[in-house]
Image (tube, rainbow, N blue to C red; front, side, top):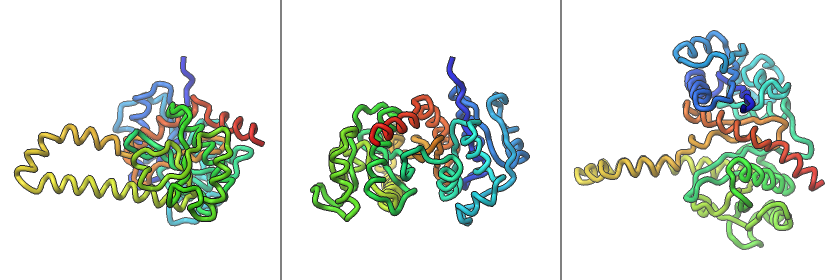
Length: 336
């Protein structure tokens, strides 16, 4: 019999809260039998939304958290002042062992600050990175870091590479994942000071499969399984990726609807095109885990709909079942 995995979900965070968040939680427990979801937030609002669904009431719990942290608030100050917020209450559940993981579409700053202040870092982890999966021609790649550490050092990037490799091998099942550092050219001597300092350190790591530099244009082609960079570069890559993907889909739709002939062609190719575009839908891969914490914290998009919330919850199951944090601890202790 499978062990039940408990996931605390911030029901009040995100542009589409609480409706889409709650719907995602219901979808998740319907898909996986070993999940229990704890929704934190205004209990009256949550119960009202839950009343519209048929679900196993033993597997969704509501914990009252009357305060909400908004994107306009200073993250650290909000975490310290709003002890009864949906984010803080849920993070404390992870800290206290009442939940195995936490998912939120709310304030990124508050989730990052709360993850470190409340859940805490694994011993030896210098900076926890945000690590989303991004679609490529060959499947997916892990982008580390995409938003947590703008002013990272070389030693931080080395840890990002190690944690990213552990994640890809154990969660995605990619054996000996290829690791590359984002650069402006393939040559070893290219790059800024951070890249030049990090490159030889990665090259000398025996526990990762470092393949060298990767240019941004090679990322969509699946040039590496783990893509290492500091958060400024990573966030630019992620946002451009999302924006360009959306723009291309719109242009394709406009072109297909431009003439009678193209409309006929669109009807013929619609099923194949729809199936192909599914592979480049980032929401199917869930959220971005904050790697290197004592518990699992996952940040999903602020505009996440129910499908992405469901997938973010399901992603926590694999992470927990594969004991990713224990593997990270073991790796770091072996390299001390």
